[in-house]
Image 1: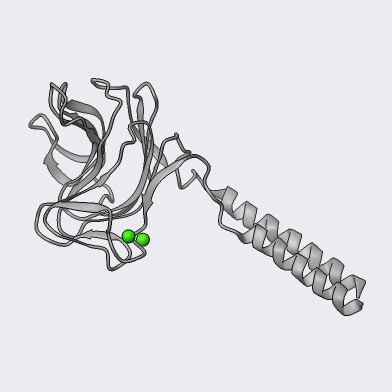
Image 2: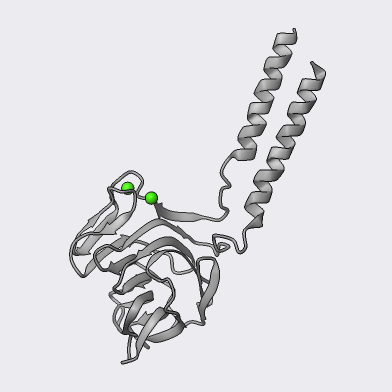
Length: 243
Ligand SMILES: [Ca+2]
Ligand SMILES: [Ca+2]
């Protein structure tokens, strides 16, 4: 009888531990995602250059210019990814589409210039991040000029609301925001254009506006884990005292 009760208690503790330490899942409707951890980039189409996914991320491996796309019909919501920047410019077009439109195809894109390079649509030399639109009413929607630490890994969250307002969080901090420029509400593809050595990973696309990740200043995650540990310690003490 005592053995059975101990077994039940052990099972209960295991279940509680499982619940406490289970990864936090995100809310919202995830439409598509790829973490490349299966070592391939099935569902992506190479437009120019060469890519590999052998290291669990999608890496440009061909030549100075490499381009790849994934079908994506999300025009409002969240585009979340990690990007690995090297020296040359990166362009992530999170909305591209309507190639049959009378006024031609269009793109909303984030341009990353790790080192001084032309800004789109004018002759300015620019280092940093720029939110731009190509196609009808092409232009720069907002810029974040910085020459610090762009080369390397960054986490990007782009949110677009149903009236076209766009916000871009870089490493959890709001850096770019703009209203709609020549409002469009459809998309066909998500595309990446980048130099050799650049990589992208953990691409998640939602049809809802998600909270940026990682959360600012971050004590919450530690608090959750710490709180769970306290609960477990209390339970273990109760079990031991009962024996
Ligand atoms: Ca895959
Ligand atoms: Ca990965």
